[in-house]
Image 1 (cartoon, one colour):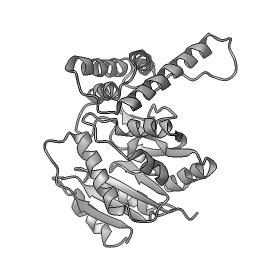
Image 2: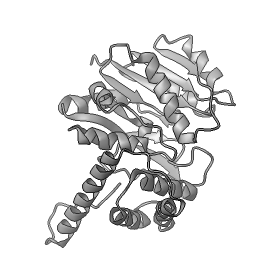
Image 3: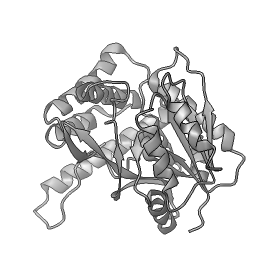
Length: 306
């Protein structure tokens, strides 16, 4: 398999995980044309560890970026990615991969992802799914099939360029925005649960937050993305029974969503993308309700998800 791809990894205070991430990329069955690790102003040994490997692998480059106190954690992370992309944008590559600095890859992650791209020329963004340690147990993250987590996102280069890449959001959700904008112009976005990686830090806890605080933050992110209230209610009810910690996870998400209204948080997502997202969500809600009202069949209906 001769696939030309680049990887960009934003890293902030990841000295506990960065070495494992580097070894995971080195072990890949298909190596990138270039891998840019952007240290986003770490105060620990993240950059020093990465630079030790830079000497031995020609495809690896390490760069540092001065972190601004005026930028939120999420926005700073995106600015780090954008600075990394600026360093490789003139190279010849077919795919752009984003890889967080706390991910443990399977050895054939990118090879398997590229197989899915080959099977579907309309696939613009793809990802596997990840396992997380929550409440002391390893479990698979509850990811919608159309959702591609930024931590392991892979873009077809044409798609990335067409949508203009990421927008730095104060409260996160930049990966969801890329998915919406990609679907708006005709691309498909899919995650593949058969391709699994390990996420060392559950979503929303990268800043040292608790799981419930992280769930609250994800609800606020949904508000900032413009999620429809009815869809959000269905989503939170579903998470109450399917996502650990049960019940409180869904409640915290809903509380975060409602806090967006109370705080009058700005919605940075373009208006046309927000409108498109809401139409998608209402369509999915209607389809799910219609399926549930039909007689039983051997095929399980799809519940409304992210």
